[in-house]
Amino acid sequence: MTLPSIPLAGVIGNPIAHSKSPRLHGHWLKRYGLTGHYVPLEVDAADLGDVLSAMPRMGFVGCNVTIPHKERVMEHVDQITDRATLIGAVNTLIFRNDGTILGDNTDGYGFIENLRQGAPDWDASAGPAVVLGAGGAARAIVASLLDAGVPEILLTNRTRVRAEKLREDFGARISVVEWVQAGNLMEKAATVVNTTSLGMAGKAELRVPLDGLRKGVVVTDLVYNPLRTQLLETAAAMGCMTVDGLGMLLHQAVPGFERWFGRRPVVDEETRQAVLA
Image 1 (spheres, rainbow, N blue to C red):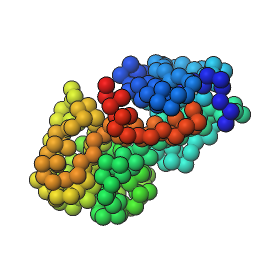
Image 2 (image 1 turned 120 degrees about the vertical axis):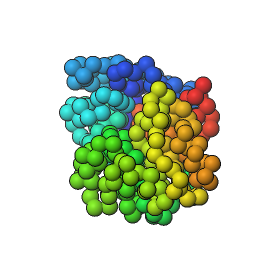
Image 3 (image 1 turned 60 degrees about the vertical axis):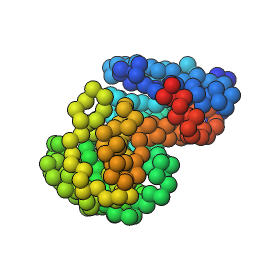
Image 4 (image 1 turned 30 degrees about the vertical axis):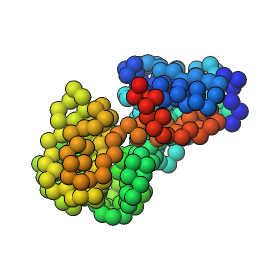
């Protein structure tokens, strides 16, 4: 891919002021001495198509897409990767030299890379994964866990019908369990993932009993504000290996940055601190 003299990328969403992505990509651009810029773009749903068609002519080589446009943007791309099709959402766009737009989803990649970095001994095949929640984020997590080799996913959601839809889409390795029974799943788990917003600053706490957790189970939370959620604090006190959610945000950004700016960035402690600053 031939880069413009000053390649541009960004993140499209609404609202967007809270996004940490400009800080992350700005850190990498500076760290590697690369020419380019990454900017936040607040875009209304009605303007999405017009904005995307104009961006390549303005020097943009691609962009990230966040809430509420991850599904709608699929109507405006020319090609969608298999993993984005499976997940049913796009979070990364590449504007190609031939004028076409490729849509990808790197959320699952980011999730798995974060797990492997934060819990190097994690073994996908060690046993069932308990997944709390069945929203948009859960689709990427379920797809990536199945791809990594988890033998079974025990899925639970406050609204059962959403969990049933995931089982319908992803197949027999998913078992749906009532939300009120979530605590009973912990003794079976080798991996536990919270994909809900419960436990996030300003949201209700995640009130799932954790007494059944066994020492050594890997527990991760997609919430990263606060960085150490009550789920992670409790699990750590019980001898579990815990992985916070910030790393998923960092790792999911790697493939896009590499395509847009021509350098594969490294996610390390310096990167984390730059984003948290």
